[in-house]
Length: 53
Image (cartoon, rainbow, N blue to C red):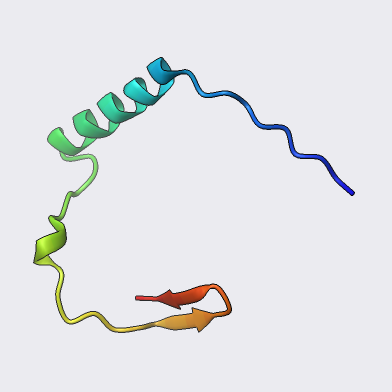
């Protein structure tokens, strides 16, 4: 049986990640879409864990 070690995440690391993501969106490195803009969902795949839309 294998063991998985879990690293504690510092709240400062999380803040840095959120800050990085917001900056990437504001500088158009990542395109942001509001959830409300999505409609007409279609399933593209399914497995024992659920469906992919």
